Length: 384
Image (tube, rainbow, N blue to C red; front, top):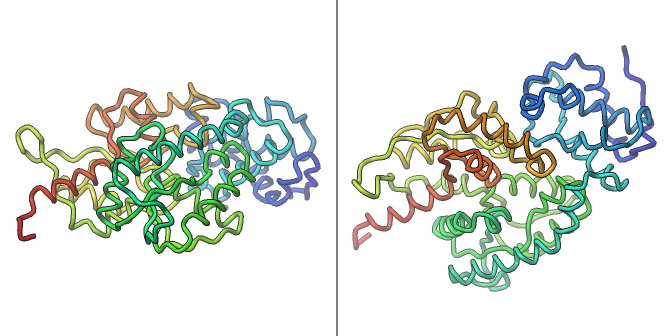
């Protein structure tokens, strides 16, 4: 059957995604096994087909825009795994992102998403305090002090995992400094909530704050992905080259020293590595974290069953911990079980939090990079 051309009067913003929605509506659901959400809670409406079909029918006024349909746009982590198994490479996560914006603009977003947008100003004020404290701890200059390198540590690191934000700052300064910490953010949480205009404003502020810089080092790959994707969507140009800390460390891998036990000084066994969705599938960085871990441990990391560009989600993305907390936790438990009690390393703030909440012994790659740099200082000769 050939899809008709819809008008999408109810959610006109989705008009630009008519082809993508139609492809899913008329599809035999080849990607259903890829979605972490519908795998954790097996409901047809939570499959990529179900979510896209719901958006199609709401937009085309076949069904009323009530929460039983519209909330399905937030039943997605943004992992893009379904795109891998789609013959058309249909960008389901991107389309659901547009649906979130349309539903948010119509005043029908779920309460958790509305709360994220409403409290953003308050949380940004808290972020400003954390940035000021971090600058004081590390003796970082202000952004206007002709500093060529900026750092976006990541809001989740700064607010929830400040010790890892410190590791990001130490590593970025050591590898690319002198650098300073940015007070603006990627606006990724606003985009996931559906507040597209809010994210645009944040990116405009970040572009102004980094004007004149040559390099912007981003600690959380989810933030780097949000900056690049959001800047392209909103037509915002950034002067500095945007790189993740993982990229920066991989190009300076010889500056890292091998990690050993603090007690006996014995070499440590390689950990299990989890590819964050936005790092591996979104940014295409799969060999870089493995090069870093091989340098730090003297051998390649152990692999999860689903890895690299075929990695499986941790359940921490897309605001799923807020909109569907039980499903998010179930996804994280399933992934963390693969580590079988061994050290699990990731490179994503939300993944790290999800794994730790699931009881896994988990570390962030930024912490290991910082340790490798500190150890190289301790083992260097005085002449060096």
